[in-house]
Image (tube, rainbow, N blue to C red; front, side):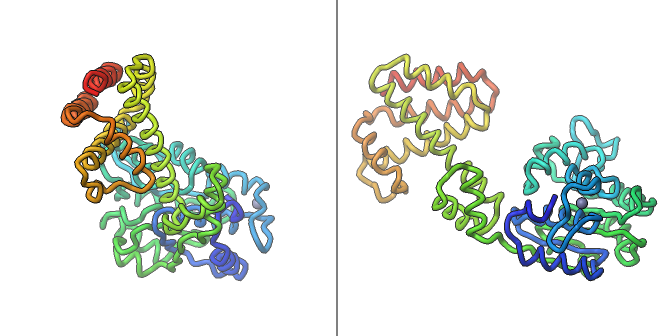
Length: 375
Ligand SMILES: [Zn+2]
């Protein structure tokens, strides 16, 4: 990862480059951020910069064999320690450690270096458990850093989310942090430094990674989502400079407008008695995933609640955003009063069926039929 491939952070990049040029890179550094500021990419790019034999005053070269291996995250002297837990494949008796998940990690980080903690757990399938950096991992860290460097240069250990390290693991690592073997660097990347065990925290040089510059983030979002620069700027501002938060917000808003479109088509089809139109809508919903189907149902409940409020003349407590007002008022005039409770029950029934893993086609054809008959 070259510094130039990371959005923003010009000042921090220059500070790190200066440290490296002056030979003052600390052996234990803690990069702190709020989720989505880009600290992990910066730590990786810094290790690559320090290792590249052809670097200049601005960046690593990006094309030498060392950079190539760093960019694929396969350099043998670049190690990672990550929060992990047991999964279907890696059961507790196998003592889960990062190495079991390293392929998934490489793929995930190359695809999105701003991965969130939850995304990581979803990718490796630890389900509802939290990840942990335990004593087995700490032993591996010590072992990896005590080996001779594979390629003759320095060795880097990047610990992602050290706040997930337990006391026993931290105790093991204290000596390493106090007296690091020559040519070894430990970069910790934390989103909750206040939760890191104090004896570790106090021994690290702390680098604060600040929110992304709003304009740069806005441009990046506009490009990534093919939206206007004004919209990019809007999302950048309300994300507080976090690229992962901005992405989440944009995806949610796209989902809401999809849900709105599907629901309005469904209601229209039912009122117009257009059975073919109704079928095309429920078929479309039925082929999406369960989470998506739940989102649709929750959206429909909220929409109908608002329409009901407006039909009762209590617009002010319907909590309807401006963008939806026209649509909600239109439906408040069209829907028969008897529909509300039937529609509500039908959607709640569908939600319960989704949780019970009932066949999706059955759930949504049934829901549509109930709408069709009562609208
Ligand atoms: Zn290079």
